[in-house]
Image: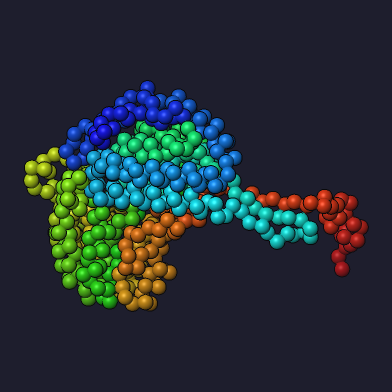
Length: 504
């Protein structure tokens, strides 16, 4: 069966305890950003359908938390295996729905698979610890318990791995999971959930729709944790609503990552790294290089090399032999183009690229060419807000100190990159740049065993690593006295000699 045939099978569906069923909600078109063709529909699930899904998740979670960790591990490994089986179909569908190159979509499924396998094992390694008792003869220890029903509200740019990073940790911890995908990647998300069919029915569910659906999940007293990835304004709303219920949440909002290049760096490598970091998924990545700070001594040479690398990038249909596809939607393209126009109005110079590519292929769809801007100053708006598009704004700096200063003059603190072979600069970059992640000569890498997340308005909480596992677990303290001793040292009646005897 082709992916297009599969799309027809999941149009307007949501996943419940009975599998994939038609929603009674209004249907909306899914549009291929490459050519603006309608490739399917997604449903705006009704309020009652969301209530039903939450109720199912609550019921099945009570049974799932009783399962032993070995059994959970085996099932998660099986889900990873099934995801590997449908990896080509998942990648093709994501390319058709989001526009990203097939290679990037295929890689994203791979990252999801490794995260699933990682948490299948890590959750077995540590489920609490024995403490040195505070009272002789007692046993004091901690255990880890699931939170309950976890709602994950996901973006369009990485609908597979951002979901699995959280879902795998949540499931391994004994929680049930409800996915609310982006309207722009609903079909891909429904396809992904086929890999979870090996789990108990209703343990992982998906409700598609608009903001109302996500808001219902966030506001429900029967969801116990919310993982959100999206904009800062919506992230603030999610955090505020969760606070009303003392509900735990993780927020991954936006990035404004600096990319620093110093004279000691091999410029050919730094230029390739910069072209990649600014343009992967057409720049629609939260950890994209958003602000380039280039030392004055190598500025001109670096710009020349960066332009040479960007000019090599192949733009086109993500199912072809290309490096960059279109923006995901007309709304995103319009937003991005306003940012570029404003930067130019403020004095930035177009050193290369920009605008809609020429050719018959680009007459329809939401296309834009990568652009390199020079003459950018720290005061310009583009250096303080997330562009989320294929742009490299370059600011000349006088020193490493100034680069660090400018890098930290941001409301965001997700990641940052430094290219240098000077050990002192490398260590200063790690210690002084205000971010949740820092890459020295290795931009945008992730590691299943290391935490992903940011500071400031980039969000709060962590995915991946042991920190990501504890995001979805309570810690409970247990104290046991097997001797059922009378604890005279602090029980009633208090000893007379321990009473207040007056001032001396």
